[in-house]
Length: 132
Image 1 (cartoon, one colour):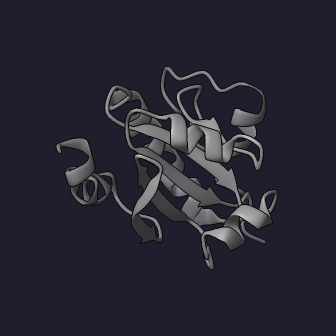
Image 2 (cartoon, helix red, strand yellow):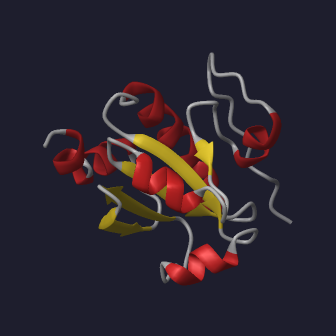
């Protein structure tokens, strides 16, 4: 049996459902009811990670997304969707494996990334979104 991974996010304090998801307060957990509104209403691009509690790569990328959410809060909104809890959303966006990262801008899907990435690789892939 492989032990569960646990991350400490420095000065970030994790609360409630976000603690379960490995998220800071700068990352929003989306639901079926909030997904469309958050994507459409955001004046800045929205990164959405589809993840699962049992997924080791999802746990590895969690602190990376946390730090990007804090550092680029004025240019990028970072959200998460638990694909096990929200299978309709996963199906709607053809999420076949986790982590899957989708980037929306002006309500439209602009980018899809499948699999965990290092911070530098993720920032390279987001350069067009962060520096338009």
